[in-house]
Length: 98
Image (cartoon, rainbow, N blue to C red; front, side, top):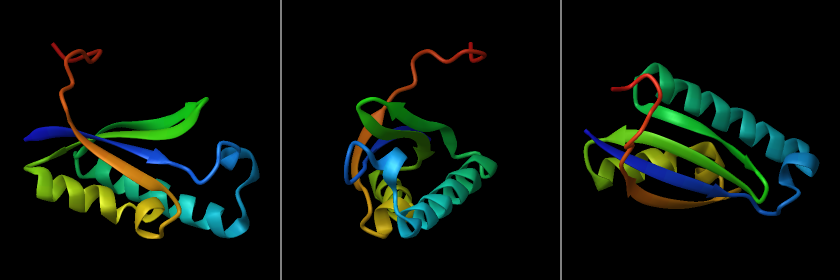
């Protein structure tokens, strides 16, 4: 199982402070999606950078096709709200992992 990173780029740097109700609804779906990936054992970590603003998701997938499907199925991406950048990734150091 390979590790992958996707970065989410919001539509503006003030997004966390001024998202519309529609954008907030999409971001709620995004959070549920990440919770599902975590429950499935695919998500390694996820969270937002606080400045400049972008989101980070590190997850496991068998290959690039599966990784792309996972990233593009994120409601923040599939809705067109946020842009995604996908890259192979290697978790080299992780607390609690020998």
